[in-house]
Length: 487
Image (cartoon, rainbow, N blue to C red; front, side, top):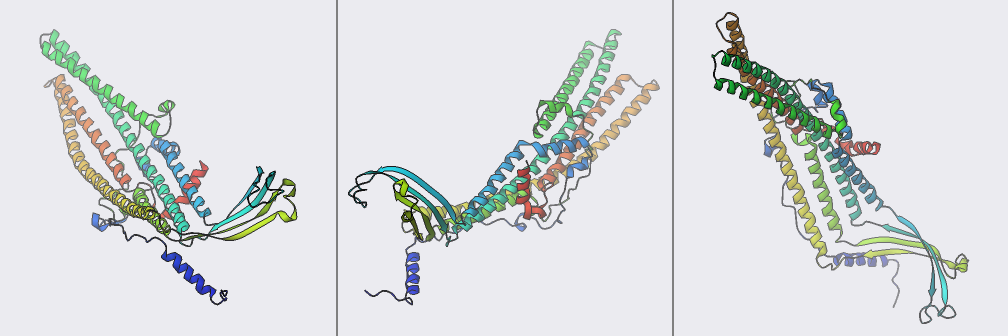
């Protein structure tokens, strides 16, 4: 049979490639079904874009809050866990990039073996016990013709982006939790102060009731009622102080500290009515401001890269392999000139029949895209609701607080007039105390409304992405990675 001429060899190679490709399993015609939610479909686009909020908690004007926030952002265990996940994802990038490079290794062995006299080695070596020496340097380089390894690198990069954004989302959530807990500490502290004033008022009322009873101007019923009111006031003081202690414990936990941290927390000096950088409508750029939404978007990219990996599995995979080394029967002959061995050539893997495994993997990868898109849509809808709820809460609280301010002003005037009547002999001390109690109750409600308003503004800032700056996203993974390395 005549040997093929050099001109016919390219034709033969092209034909061989065509045969190999035609022999591959067919990629299923399956496409993602879930569509990503757009900003317009959830009512965004009318509000003006917002500047990043920065360290928004400074607006409360409390140095102690600033200190606790800094310590929490530096030592909270949940952030440490998020940083560890980011470091692991970044290691995945390096591991997958290594798959694009030649892999070189050295194998060496010295084995005592009886050689078969009926195999490829004739006597006198065949049928005897000999040392077999083998030392080889090997090279394996995947050409990645189908782009599988490149898709794995892209998938790892998107996973690292998602992990970096998860870290930013954890920081936003933590800063909101610290600020809200601190507001609750301020609420409990002020409520405890008011409760102590209530106790003092009720103690004076009890004394008056006892005096009236002894002078036959009052009854046992009045005395027992005064005792009950005093007990209720003391209960309220105990509950307020207990709530304060719980908030102190919560702040210590958020800062990643133990029981010794409690002594470092003094009464807050926070301004609950502080003006924070919040909008009055849904911002147009909400979807780009929240790191959790951007992380969900990155996970869509992870899933899309996974589909490319699954698709590449349907195509031939060619590796270049080579080796050079020494082989000898008898260790003394291993380093002689005739012991050299070497070889090189391509290695082909061609998927033809895999029992449906490749098709199932591909369909699963496509379903993974749908799952990631659905999760993204859920994050978008949740973000819109959180923002809208916070805006509504702020508006409702402002109206409620305005009316409560009128109530406090009216009761303050009532107390003043009762005191005037008492000084002129036209009123009774008990009337002044009763009016004072109503004023204290109104003050309690006013404190609650002020704290609720501050909490609503904090929730809105968190819903808007907090201090996260979306313009830094391009360098987010590398910057967070440097932070992780430093820790």
